[in-house]
Image 1 (cartoon, helix red, strand yellow):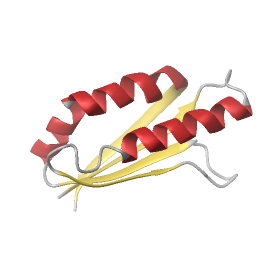
Image 2 (cartoon, helix red, strand yellow):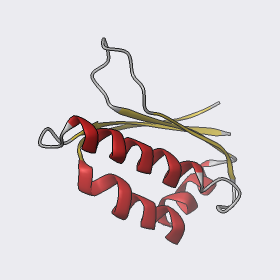
Image 3 (cartoon, one colour):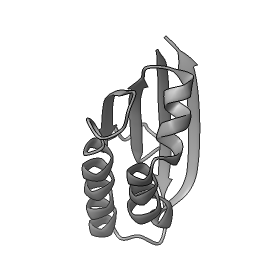
Length: 100
């Protein structure tokens, strides 16, 4: 199995209320992918970091294999969420994939 973890920082120009709305959209969009993408076992999005954090949103997902991760990356439903709810509002992205 493979873990796929991403941390995002939202764009500075977003107001606090816009950031809350964006976080809710990212969480809803990504978590709705469960059961729709082959090999995606679990997907969870954290949107309430402690003040000590320097990221705004975290994706924690588990996939069956590295091949499933590659399929997830290009799956049309994932791409639609990434292009519509994530990329327009984020300034940084850090990713770590590893076997478990």
